[in-house]
Length: 429
Image (cartoon, rainbow, N blue to C red; front, side, top):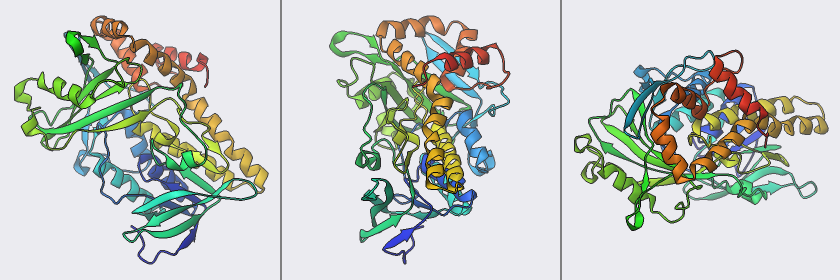
């Protein structure tokens, strides 16, 4: 919690700006390793974020790694896999059985989810300041390196300065800190948007995440399939999270009102499901999905980017939480190693490895994802894939592994080897 007697200036080994999944995970691993970490969050917990609230086994693994109790007794809803609906076909695909990832996913509202992560970081020793709105970087006049941040703290918006030799930008898609350091969004990388709301519904206790592949642009009496999907995730609490994700490879991306598209899609649902305006418990809210490393470099002059700030969202399926947490863990590992170096030159060499680590882990896969985004931006290809692909269960099992990035890196079955091989030979950009 924000310390009422917090000083006008404070120092630490590392400052993490933003206490979403990326920032809290980074702070957790840094604190666990014994570093003094300041975690700065502009809002106050609990707080809401626009999200589908559904987590794949990739995110589940990250939670387990952090020592978080993901049992149903602790308020988590488990799911077996993904139900895909489209082209007149309804297909239930269980999550793959792998040595690297659990065989179940999870559902939890972001207000609860984010607070669980930040409290775990606090338990590890991170110092959290809530209602701390970072206003800009503090730069070394001689080197241009970031050596801290300025902020407005608390209800009285008291001006404070926090200093550290390293700063982590975990401040989401808008990432004002990265912009202040001259890091702008790459226009050659895909972007998506997500819109969602909640309804009271008898379908609240589903043990599959549900994805609908047919969203339509029906303007001017036409009917063109859009590159994206709708989702229905039961929350287990009497409500369903219902939303859609769309890619900017659609010619209609900047022209449609996605709230209207969501309303029209819900209006076509069976009435007994309750996805009607009178059952809506929250307004429709939207958020951007920055994909495929759309902001680079991920390290420069003492600043590391994690999660949405570095454009880590998976372009295949719009998943962001798993990659936010993974990049936080990777960044923390690099920082811990750099901290142990004996010279400034040695520390800098260690830090400069961070972008290479990210590209080794995700670069080829994200390149494949960018090609996928371009393909399904063509309405005819998207429609053909929906109508023909769903009738081949083995192909869809392969597609699930590919889109959710769920393979065993060593060994694995033939599908794993094909997907891993494709990611290795794809350009590592």
